[in-house]
Image 1 (cartoon, rainbow, N blue to C red):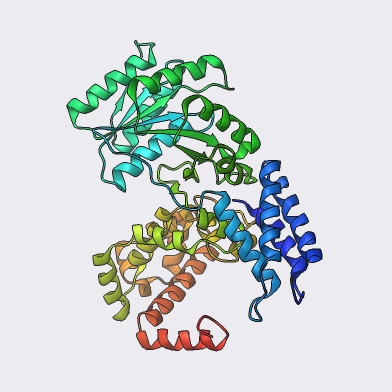
Image 2 (spheres, helix red, strand yellow):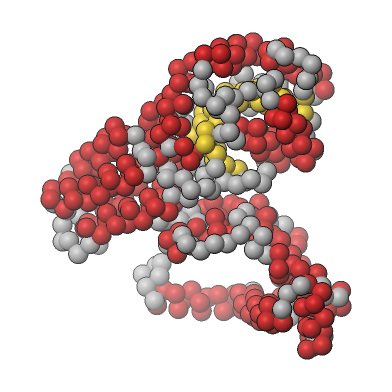
Length: 447
């Protein structure tokens, strides 16, 4: 996500490295590179120009402290302006009402139906809501079927009527159904087109007027850049939506839509889709996105994902086992599965400061852990509980049973032992204090 933009921002800031002060000349050189980076990312030209003009004005008006380099100051100013550009604050989705009604809009292929499922799952698992999905795409039976498949997968009811060809009637009947059955949120998935047309706009406008939603969301494919912004503008002029959803942000996106859309249509980005899985949905935080664009990582989001998978009781049990040196392959497998639930590994690594650039050309597949799981599942229950039992003969059997070679089995055994030692060390407060002292001695935080 945004790797190319991050790289170009870093290149731009190098102009100021070694400079003793900020001057009109070196600021102009830096911002020339910044503007080029934004335009290459398919950011709206007017937006890019206003951004660099604002940064220049602020940079030349500030004194450089002796403890802060001109490059660091420019990074700070660009960060502040990127946050402002993307909306300043995170904006919540409005699900008030009995039921709360969410109307989905967007072009065909933007990921609207998939996002409807993700949003229903998010509201059910994170907000404790009882959502009803409504299939109002009367032109594509496949879209109705897709929504039913997603609903079944998530355990969420889907309302549809293939005999009815009027989306307004379907939506109204669905809301009555929701009221009678106790659903407190209704998500209406509407039809999309390959391009903006009058028939489409008239239809969704009619649906909106009929059901009076508490929230109207516009779903856009982040990979389409400026086209996404232009489409958003056309939709907003007709239906006055409340917020934007950027999908496919895990793809080869240049970032133009994320950086331009708020300034062009003045509507907040509320969520971003980061993968195909139903939990690959993130609340949009402008400050965190600015951190990632400037190569600072997104540790807050990483910690939040970890906390979502955290089970306090299981954690206590695991800590006791570690302290007694009883950590085994069952525990190791449990840790692997918790990491898997947090999301795509490459995306997680990109949340660590400085790792986005390192991970740019590294190909980590979603099934990166399947070989580890195959090896562990090929062990007997006794071997998983007592890894010391695993000798050469047993390793040969495990390798054959998992379809992996002996080298991979040996590698996993070493990883297990290294993890065990590290967790044992970290469970001792004295060791943790020593590590922190060493870290400070190397110039870490606190110095």
